[in-house]
Image (cartoon, rainbow, N blue to C red; front, top):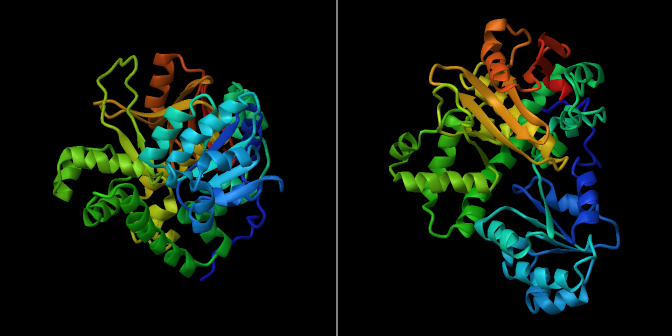
Length: 419
């Protein structure tokens, strides 16, 4: 079986982050690309201008060149230097601070990449604060695999567009069939480029093994690998649910603090996304436990052993999988613009729920996510109440409708294809 790729333009495809890298290189002496393994960070480095030198710390020869005397290396290579997998050499960060401060006004000198780790996060915040622009990368979004360059929902949202401007300006990025294919497969680049179902399965198997036994074991030497493997499998079953740490701890036979550490590791290495509850200005009793999703739908479906799209549509976790896919598309779209924002979910003790709440300079935007094409007034009553109570400029329903539409004076429906 071969996957269909009729509408997808993949080879030589530009990533949406390229504009942001260019902008940040004008603002900061150093730019950091952080994100999960195999999301395309190294490939993006190769698209830097030819004058840039690229060093990969996973190559022993490059590691020796830099680590032998880091300060001397940075004196010899004062600019146009990219260093891949920088977290493998923690001493690099303090040396970069010294090198940057020698010529603080000169921007666009260094690019580093990293798969997140406690050392990377701490080193960047302690050594390079104010000197670095951080870009969180992710696997392909639907906007990228469809290679459709129409004005995005995210650009309009952050530009404080009105509901009527959204209705008039947005155009579809692909067909509903293409959306379903992307949803089932997820966004990791290499399986997309090979476009073969057997390779996709084999790649996912290797990716999980590499993530578990190489990255996590190396970053967290004391971890119980067998329990953490069971934890990752468990994440697939609870993706899209409110997290009860005590239930997870009982399932694994470990303490609650250990489980919280496991969730922090999964979130910090970009496999899982913790979404906190929205508790500000609470008018009603609300659920305060966090919610979470496996970030890549293809990885989720692999761990759930869902063989194909038909199996996904019949699976009891189908709705939660769809919610996670939409949430990731929205968060990735905002991240690639460099937009500062926070994300939450909202649930009252009475059962009213909103899948995603965005808060940033663009205001407070609640978003309800539905798989269906047709939405009834009853389904968005909680959204209408939230918009009214908090005076939001709009509420959004993301679904699979044929086109954008108004559901209410302040509620707009936007099909996933139009994001």
